Image (cartoon, rainbow, N blue to C red; front, side, top):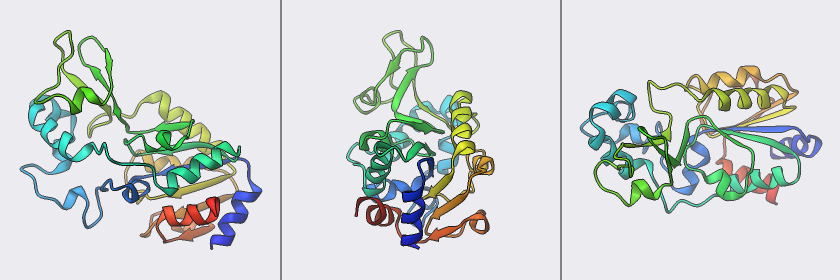
Length: 238
């Protein structure tokens, strides 16, 4: 299977990568649905509730306790998957990364064209005056972070009950629709609307790099169950 993937990459200059939490677990960032993921840890409220728009508005301080503790990982560094994808872009083969992750590790690894469907913890903004802030506005504050104007600072991440950014969605769909090879990695493809983007792919070859089965397994030409960092390191970086 590794050889098949290597041949697909060698033969294509129009690849798009679509990734989820499994891309970043090798960097020490927990995913949501694995045995050790956030959904299986105990809090006063389920993570899905805490990470919702209504909870943020109602219990903002409680939201930030969880958010600082579990959603921000300043020590995380790009792993071989991020590095290999940046290399493919540099070689002119990879046209875009479409990610459900909010950690910014693709850009840290050097990727330039990254469509962040669920936003980024690295960006934050004032809900009152719209002034933008970096990550330190959250990490270096306590309680509810406040703007100089007095407004509440909110992470530029898509919470439950919120819609995806329209412009980001359009660009991601366009990239997927135009791709010749679509490599999907580290995602269960169960989270919508993001997972629905896969249906726009009309190219020649779909590759699935995921430890567990997905609803799209029957559509894939190549399926590899090994850790994504291991696969891309061997195939791309050698």
